[in-house]
Image 1 (cartoon, each protein chain N blue to C red):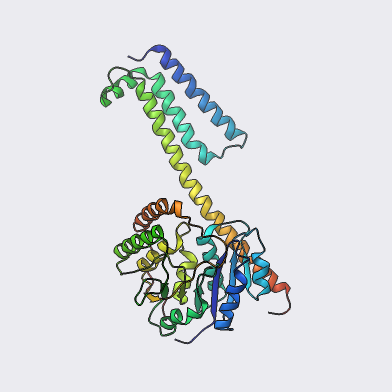
Image 2 (tube, rainbow over the protein chains, first blue to last red; image 1 turned 135 degrees about the vertical axis):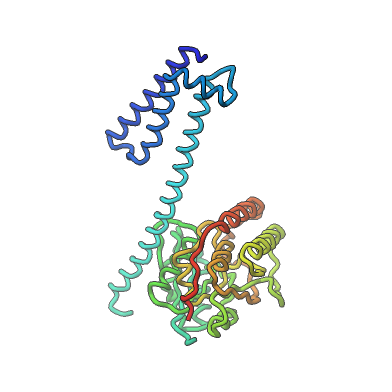
Amino acid sequence: MTPIRASIAGAVASIILILVVVELVRGRRLKERYALLWLATGVVLLVLSLWREGLNTIAGWLGVTSYPPAVLFAVATLFIFLVLLHYSTVISRLTDENVDLAQRIALLEERLSRERRPEG
Amino acid sequence: MSEGRLVAIVPAWNESGAIGGVVDEIRAFDARIDVVVVDDASSDDTASVARAHGATVLGLPFNVGIGGAVQTGFRYARDEGYEVAVRLDGDGQHDASELGKLLGPIHAGDADFVVGSRFVDPGGTYRPPFARRVGIGVFARLVSLLGGQHVTDTTSGFAALNRAGIELFAVEYPHDYPEVEATLVALRSGLRLRQVPVDMRERQAGTSSITFVRSLYYIVKVMLALLVASLRRYPRLESARR
């Protein structure tokens, strides 16, 4: 069984995470679309921390018999991977958009300078 | 096929020492060619030198790398309605007097994309350093395998394209390892690729962007990129040709 203090620590950490994310969104320092994965992380970890029977059951499924809270770490790690992977796709898209903008600027500036010149 | 308007795309990054000669050589080959130098945010006076030699300059606001720079040229060629484009490096390693060999198959309508290869027989005298040679050989085999056509030199940036090629590369040009991947993109999209033997010179000025030390790492990266790129879907060009 999970030690009660580990459950409390997990729940407190999850609640802090959720509060920080909500506060960042409220203050417009984090966009909703990037907050969703973080909120899901906080909620899942909170549920697993408070629902001690459930954590035990899941740990049993996974063959983790000696120390059920290890499942909390595993789930947290999985969500961090998801967030990072999501960011990699976001960065890739931003890179493409950035290059596209740079190219458009180069093309537009050339056209502009051509139209300013009376000849050719 | 009629000989339409022709543009030369020359990507350049800090090539003020060589770019003037490159522009002059292209115009000496054929004065009707519009020379477009894509200045990839050089910190030297590459842009003003190119302009002084009569080139049109497309100035990128920040450095986007060779692939993004070349694509800027293809977008220009597409938007301005050019029928044929040639592409040469801004460092002077491509001899503009060889352009006729590249343009032959394009004007004859035999190919959409003609690449100047250093290794098609009868080969030239160019002997790259060992690591570079290994890389070129590996890439060529891999692209041949994945693209379904035998190619000998996938790293050459000396090329000519017709309108179908211009339109493909204007929207679909790889940014990370452009020459190698572009060959694969061309084959997968159904462009008719032809390789012709050309001779290349040593660099006139400046330094290559690929140093010897990084070569092996570079080879591995490009191979991975090729394998991933080969899983992608590409537009098929059936009707674009005339």
